[in-house]
Image (cartoon, rainbow, N blue to C red; front, side, top):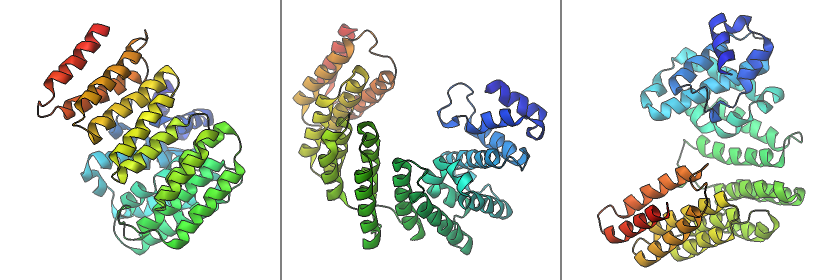
Length: 359
């Protein structure tokens, strides 16, 4: 991919082969760890590819448009000055290009990642002020969400994510109010319930249900239906291949409701139910971090459970492989934050010594 990218940029996208442009358009840049384009490089690269790719390659150009805009939005999150880097004429041009994608079923289905998940940052990037242009963009995006919900060529999960998109767009249309303070209308809440019923009646495969239930939790919670979210998770928990995901979901709901004891009980259940050496430490480290966050004064429990979780991890010869290494780093940060005032030096020293001796 790196070689193709260098050749295409050197010779110009206008003369590149369709095969090479298609490769670059559909490469998973969001998960890239080899080409290593910096955010600023991504903006320049995808802008060039979008503008210089032949117009007849409509799908590839739409993909480059999405890559350019999402990288620009990501850059703006790191540097607010980038938000105002587009001129009015550029905003108008790019808004029109986005609307062209949203209103073309073939193009929008080739760009589901940003169509479903980037409405907020892209609408704020392109049309940050209240205006007719912003209203038109959000209205078109909402109509697209309606169409995606009914598109039988898409998976149930994608169609449910279109419902999540509808909820997000309703908030954006309401002067960009925060989701926490935005009151979802009864009509939208009922719509979310109907889509939940449809999904649960449609999906019977255990593996697919695992993903769909997770998406459903986001839909119902986003609609402000917290009690119904928990009830659905409890109902479907034993029908899926990895119920510990949903135990952790319930734990987060209990934590948000201020029920620290209930939340920790569910986080612990998720760890106890998890299987597989990487999954075990994923849920175990999550439990420990939440334990320090929700019950920081439970010193004996934190120390004992830390030894338990870390002991299991360190019994494997590949303890630091894969995601375990980054989770250990996150756990270390949590310990440091827990002991920020040096209150628990002795306990933390014993945990550290246990790890060293195990290693």
